[in-house]
Length: 257
Image (cartoon, rainbow, N blue to C red; front, side):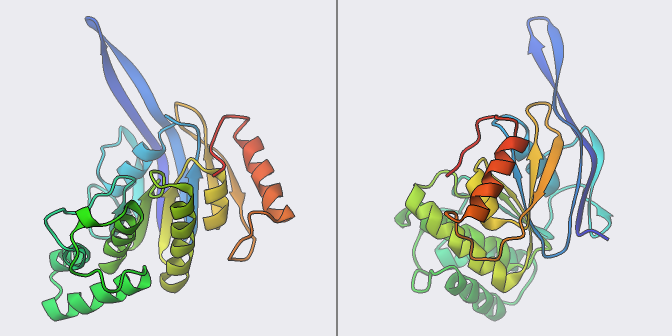
């Protein structure tokens, strides 16, 4: 049984145009699976519905048709079996770093002593030892996303969903956090579904890359990435995968950073 299964997913919106309503199809017949402990990325042109797809899997947006199943169970809304990391720095500003990471554990009813221990372990994993008492407004963008990753992993979700989490960061910080994520994934081996507009990022991180078409968004191809980690983006093998993925995208402009 796949860990995560998306079957015939559709998303339609009704748009007002004067006195008339027009239907906009954002996602059409989207189907794919993600195996347990697999890292899968989704790439595609802007506006193809990547984020909408991820929000439906997270239970944060309604679907118009189809089904999402996690461990064989239908997903009908948000839940602690899915951890989500957004592109925006979605931390609670009134909480310290440690309190932010403890939040999901508290929602699960984990005793205070245990949740502090777990939160500190994940903060160490993302390189933020010593920042437990700091508030988010004093952190850089990269540090905020490290906290967000630690928070999403600390309460031990079945699947980690990541929506362009490094898209708002500068290139140097982004490269550092990509390597951090590879290291954290190697330690936790969580099932990950990762949305990105970057071919390079998808190939650096993933076991497999799914390709979406322009709207209405559909899965139009997939590319296994069999290169050992850590990956060298300057190697001929990596360059060949970049070319193959670009060809699958049909020349649609997608980032290479």
